[in-house]
Length: 489
Length: 62
Image (cartoon, rainbow over all chains, first blue to last red; front, side):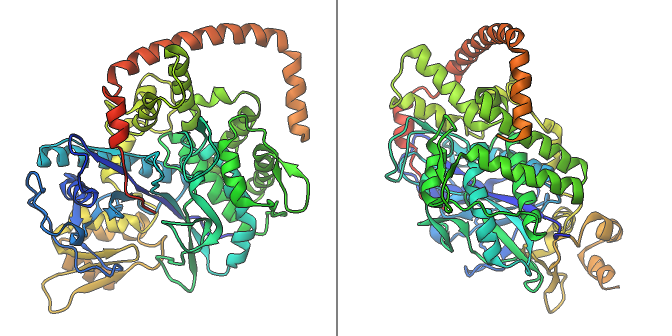
């Protein structure tokens, strides 16, 4: 039986300082992260090479008070177990490790609320409006990531992941895309395409994430016991606003990887040219383009996804007969059926279809050319984290997007950690012993309890440190020193 | 086409007339809803789309 698929997301948000087109994005991102008003601890993030995270509080106006913006590496751990920091001149939210794809989608959504609250506070502090966008491209050839992480067994040969996941990653785009006006990166012209990211993929396999992006990323950083675990770092997805779509993206991929580890994927369905197929799928709004297969013949993305659905439905029946996976299979089947018959009906489920409907509505009503900047503005505004501006939110508020979560569940997930992974321990420690926590990492916490040496608590097992294991200890502990004593006992 | 898909497309043909009627009504309702939606969005849309799009420049990330 495959290793439990602990999973999570990490998203770099687009950033704009209104009225200041020459703003420094690293400074502005630091301001956003430092201004976040929710429960958190600013810590040294111990795996990074940078100097200890400076406390860069006290930003003022204009220069935002930062003397050395590039050096101000800002890191915090939130009480929901997430990490909020600055990465590549973007504020980034890395959600906590979660137990299943529903929970992963919920904590990804909580990240939008975190970013909105941080943007509001940054705006107050800077005296200029700071806006954040949960998207992946500026439409001018610059892309930034929305990554997914899945726990794999170290015993799984990475060659198998490359072989069996490649075609899945390329073809899942039909239901993972957030939609984009136009093309980038010298790809063929197109009015609108399914994904934000496809144009930027140039390699099949590789270590890079910022240039020559590969479909399968080989970063080997397990954030856990390296003798037992791998972490698959998936960089080919779009940031999704739709809750259902995020569930679908995370769930199908986790399931695919579990089945792959169990040898339940009988055919690798190799594409003749995965990199070409990547943008071909994204550019094909009719969803009927035949993709060339390596062994000869062709198949459409929907047909290939249909094969995975067939195998994985059987796998769930046999190995994973649980409500969350049954719900996933049902949703996946419905999505593929509608994509092949009436894709427009998915405008309440998939970001790209919802966005396309809006933009086509404007094109028809105002008789606009597809190159009109109003359409690009609509595209960007779909992703604004400010609920009064966000077009996704307009749709959701009028009941035009299906929801998986209530607003209350999302708000709770901003401050309360998931209970079934080690993120529970991390989050509770942030809530209860913020003054004693000095450094953090996905797989450890470091406490200063007033002794000569700092105390490091290793967390090498992603499923240990959950509520069942440490909930009582955390309830009992009067302070961090007490907690450490209880953990040792 | 898999058996599952065949079954579905046969099922679809059987109900075609009914479905066509329902779809016509749905489409009209959809268009009305879309018009309302666009009117609503007009009110929140970036005032200067040209400027907004021009200034939306990001540093490449991961």
